[in-house]
Structures are given as C-alpha cells and as structure tokens.
Length: 323
Image (cartoon, rainbow, N blue to C red; front, side, top):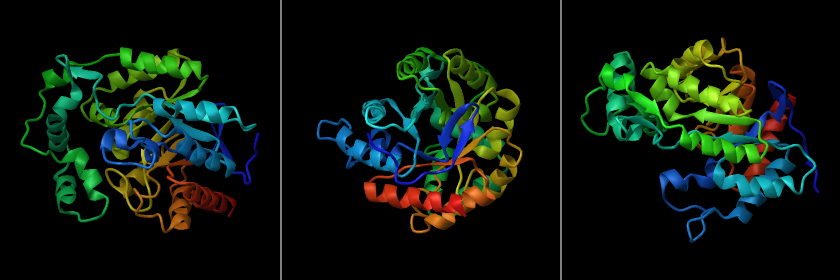
C-alpha cells in the first residue's frame, strides 16, 4: 500500500467526495479515435496497462483521487484499487467518440455529421461562422471541426430531426460494466450532447440521463458548446454536474460567453482541456489560476502522458489551490 506525498483539496458531487484535480484519459487512449502511434499502444493494438498504471499511480501519489475510466482503463483501475488506501473515485464513461448509437432512419447519426454541421451553422449568428473561418489561433482546427462542413451539405429537415432515435443497448451494457466496478459517477454526452441540444432534441439526452440514474449512478453531462448547451441543460436535464472545455485562451462558442453562462450554473462544473490542448503547458500556474480563481470551476480534468508530467501538473494545481 502507498499513500500520497501531497494532498489536493476536495469537492463534492452530491455526496461523492473527489479531489479538485481529476485525471483525464485522453493521453492514454487518443489513438483509438485519432489514429497514429502512442507510447501507450502495444504492437497488438491493445493498451500498455503497465505503462499506463505507472503514470496513474504517480497521479494518485500527488493527490489525485478522481480518474476518468473508459473501458480500456478498467484493468488499470482495478490494479490501482488493490494497492492504495486512498478512496479512488472512477468516472464511468458512456459518451461516444463517434455517434453510432443515435440513429436517423436506422443509420448512425455520425453518417450525417456534415448535414448536422450545416444544420447548426444555419442557426448560428453569421459572426460566429466568419470568426471560425478567419481565425488563425492554434485552437481553431479543433473548433472548426465542430462547425465547418468538409463537403457541401444540406441542413437536416425538421422531420429528419424529429425521427432521430436512441439505440439504448450500447449504453445499458456500458452501465453494467461500471456497476460491477461499484462506480458512482458516469459521464455522458460529448459531441452527441452538442448535436442533440442544438437540434432541439434534449428529450433524448433526458432519456439517457434517466437511464443512468435508474442504474444507480449520478450522471455528469459532457458538452463542448458550453454557451449553447448549459442553459438548456440547467432547465431540462437532471444531472449532478457538467464537464466542459474551458481554459484561459478559449471556450465555446467564445470564452466570454462561456464565462457568463457558468456564473449561473448551480451544479459542480469541471473544466476539461484546461491546458488548451497543450498550448498552455509552459504556463501551468497561469492556466490553473485562471480556472480556479476567475472561472471558479470546481475541478479540472487533465491528462498527463508521463510520470514527470504528472508530478509537475498536479504539484502546480496543489500550489494554486493553496494560495
């Protein structure tokens, strides 16, 4: 058994207590949806559990008690539980990288991604679209991927939007996995939440939230388009908290709008992409000071790809929270 060398202040999602620094999983498994090579990818295409475990253990050693647990990290999570006295809180993940289990006429919604972008773009004020196209900021490739179609496409009709359905079996199976791990928190949404909210189908997100609650979990909504989705979610969804991308450089649809919106959010809010996809890696103190002191988020979810990064990142967070 081992104990941490430092502590990080805690917060609560309802009655579940977690460190204000949460380990994100993207550094371990991004190759699954982005392709390419990774230090954590074995030759046979599986996760290098040993390498990932070493990094996760260092994070826990530096005060982290909350960990994002997609299915590929389950073995790491179980191994960790066996060697620490700390109460580690796993965040189950049922959001999809590709929207396969919401369908339109039996076809996965991901097949209509360009039509959905066209639908959303038609509803946004033109100043956003002009800004997305013209901006040269390092974050813009990521942001443009949400809104700018890669090919000419027509917006979906109202009849098509009304016919979108959820295929629940995928989500039910994933929840069963997390039930066996005795997890309390489950993330859902992602790009799916952005798409459905912008198309007026909050009812499908509400269905999924209720499915999570009926399984005995507390649902956490992930969304990227904070200034669009959060106001709707606060009115129409029963969730325990939110996870959004926000950092001192950008948020969606703009940083100023996101900051204004989160002032009125009543539930705990967790910041993902806190280092702006690596652009703020050399300004850890500034990045985390902004999020905790100005944006006033409850916690940050941040990925690290090495034990050295883990020590540096979570030491910086602990220092900011002690100031």
